[in-house]
Amino acid sequence: MDDDRWTCGVNVVFDLVGSKWKPTILWRLAEGDRRFAELRRAIVPITEKVLTEQLRQLERDGLVERSDDGGFPRRVVYGLSDDGAELERVLDAVGHWGDAHADDIRERRAAAPRRSGTPAA
Image (cartoon, rainbow, N blue to C red; front, side, top):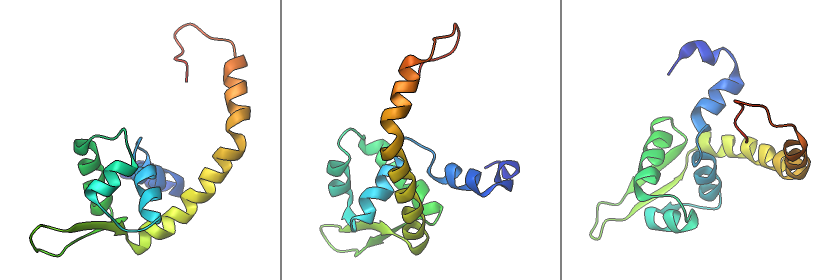
């Protein structure tokens, strides 16, 4: 973690959820608590390894809670913490903005001239 970037609250949020899968994991957990396999099926292209890593990071950062009843078979359930639920409301607003503007952004990107050495998004 680079604390110099954390002088802006937006950078804090994007540091916490700025990966390919974390926003989707939080979105799915906002629908309700889920077991690992349920979460994996709800996010079809994610691998077990990546899901495990992302869940551990989200748990470390206090956005996801993991409960284990210790029984057999083991029943581990993931859910949003209070901080995670609060952040999910913010991400929901970001998602609405993205949905409303996605077509326009796609059109602008498609119409933009390609520059040598600049990756296409």
